[in-house]
Image 1 (cartoon, rainbow, N blue to C red):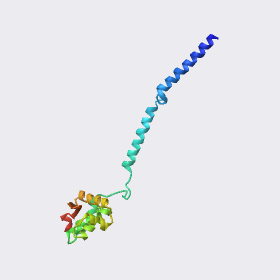
Image 2: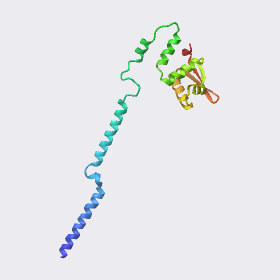
Image 3: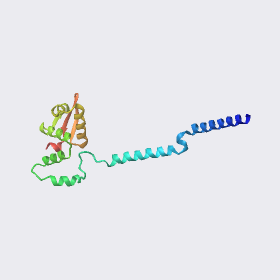
Image 4: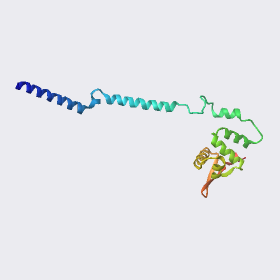
Length: 159
């Protein structure tokens, strides 16, 4: 009987040690789970990067021909060189930028930014962003004018 109690106590001792080893190892350490998790995360990151790199932007054609060829085909000689430059510039702009440049041309090449916002129905933020993109493209200049900005077409577009 004493031997049976010792054996039972020994078995309980072994079960406790096995449980402690499992707790200390954790469920992931036994089968290489961290490595598998790491590989899955890396593969997911690669998939996201590839999707972002290869996705087609909406509104853009699948194939694009170089800008120089498109300009050479579309520009026909005329008596006014500034009109040709303006036509080429307008074709290369998105819709909002084109609307701003057309409004500037209609007003003599110079407007206040708040007037651009009001006349075109843009928010103040949208008007500022569109004007900033035109400044970066070198089509307009912007100078502070009290609590707004004075936006002017560059000289080579005024004609």
